[in-house]
Length: 219
Image (cartoon, rainbow, N blue to C red; front, side, top):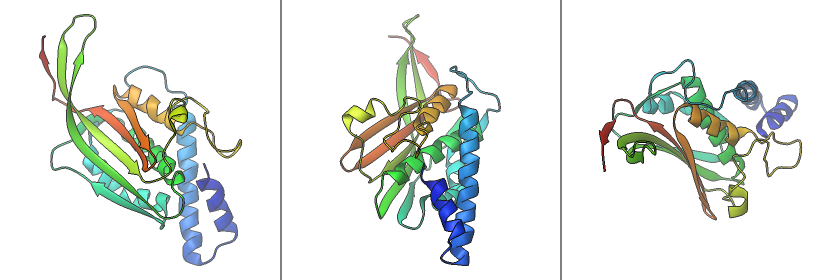
């Protein structure tokens, strides 16, 4: 995206030592994100990934608040809305974090000037049917929502945003891999990514199965 080139420019022509140090931090983070995204392109299209462990979603969000703030910059306000309930999932910490970083960068680039981004988390009950047996499974999901008040996404573009290498930016300014990689990560975790957008902004939701919350019933 635009974060890495912008930080390079600030590093060469800093307005102050403080700005220069912040630019170096952002530049290093952008480099790490790029390297990880390149590696994620090699993920197989199947459920399950090595390195999964029990993850406290609320702890992950709290622990990375400063990282998120650095990425977004001073012109964007970041709010949290976290529940009291436990949101423990089975997943790879680095991959879930990368999915969130990709969504935050996407939200940042949708905002012109000052703006707001809110990260919400909650548990939702869903019912799924096994198409082979007809059996229904009731389970709870941890839902992480990233909401922005940017320009939104038009209906025709919304149908393409998860395609690899699709981007609305001029050629050479973005790889068009961020949202495709988010979708790959969710598939690896037996989860999903949902999007809702209008002229007032966009919301992306990461949905992950909560551990030890399944019951089976028939209908």
